[in-house]
Length: 155
Image (cartoon, rainbow, N blue to C red):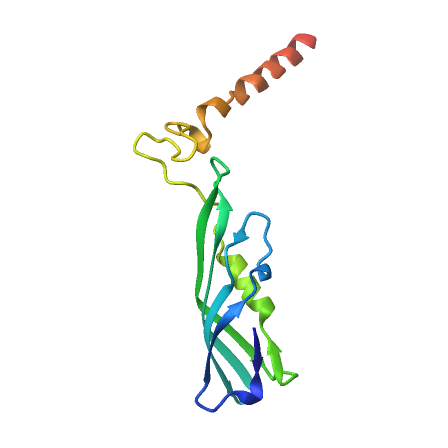
């Protein structure tokens, strides 16, 4: 997002548009469209203030079953202050990218049905600690206890 400082009237300037989806390159997120923005830019006292909203749609793998799930990202309070811009054109692309990446969920999970089953794979997730399916759960503590017993026997 580039803003031409000298084109901003005293009452401010509302800008709406889109940035390319490759702006948000993240391993666990696939954008489904462009980054949309609606911001108001004001330039007073030699400082540029940009405030508004950013949004993006995409997919991210489920933390349980790894199937892609839809993700909607919204930054409702995007704010950037550039004091004394060095050029007539100010590029806010990095600030847009940073705020979108910070708004991405840490992990996405599908909604389990009433019987605690994954709606995509059908795996049961009920009563499993750490949200791992029962088939993947192993008793790591007993394995560590056995290692301790073996060590004592050798001593």
